[in-house]
Length: 458
Image 1 (spheres, rainbow, N blue to C red):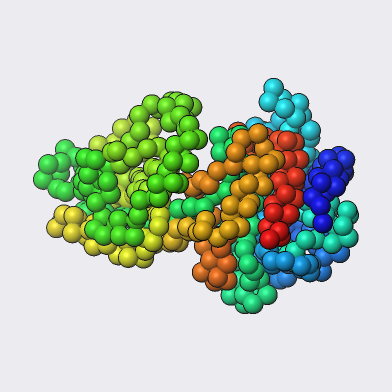
Image 2: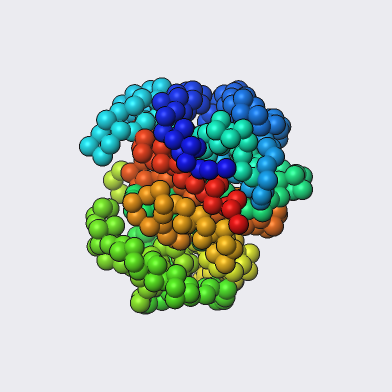
């Protein structure tokens, strides 16, 4: 099977592909809002019907929440699992949208033609790049070059509560040689990339409790312990003067990246001053001696995401609050154990809490990092295929964010994930006026066609 006629068909049918994408985008599949449950069902039904129209054996699978879509099609060569999600974020604030978020519109911009609407980039547009590549293969050759399982989730934007149970119950069916995930982007909006590192996440809420009620600062100030002051000590103690996290055992399982990968990252020419300048900053503030990409992709972090305590309304109220709290998150890398870090953090905070105060903890999320081994020859084959499609040579990169499904595929299915996406930095995902470049959609489909070709050749 030659890939050339497949690429030609993707080119000639781009208008039809965009119309199909628009149909899917018109379905307001907001997973976090129960008012849109029927719409999530409708989006799943649409995908089932679309896959079936290509000859895929597909069905909607119920879960306690929104349904999964699972489809299978046989072929020679390896077995690939493709994952995407059909649910989208809420659209509020609606008044900041230039058009109806569920009436997708093509728009000419100084950077090229885009399609605007909720879900265009995250993740319906990305999902459909793969589907359209498969459609073109089948139309040209009557079949695909390999066996593919399609797996579309409807709860990614609402925490994926049904995902792990579903994977456990259907592990034998979903196991594959490699998983493909299209929910990432181009590096610097230009370089095609395969994400091989995803940071894990640990979230903890700390509350320091002091006096039995708020106190008048004139009557008690200086004599009574102020919980905000105690919390400030604790937060300040979480980092040393070089930006390293001081939680005992925190760096257990953290390794430096290999020299060859570091050289590839350096070759990307990442400008951290421009990156920070976009948000009104200028200086790196993480671990001393580390580059910006190391800090973002391969080093763990500790950040305070919110602080509460005392009077926060208009004007002034001179009180010593009875309690103060902070929400703290950690991005994790390598083999760091989130559960061990949580216990060590709690012990450290308890030891730092003044005698006159008590501390309580509330656990939130905890997931380990995912590191994909690029020793698998499929990764280099895919990188070369991407390089053939885009002006810039493709790179293996890390991600500062977390995509837990990649780790679940690894731990529950024993399947490594290859994360390839075509989003751009200014796609405004999760924000008003979300968009997806037509170039990203078009070249994304062509890229997947090349990757399928590359992965099925000896």
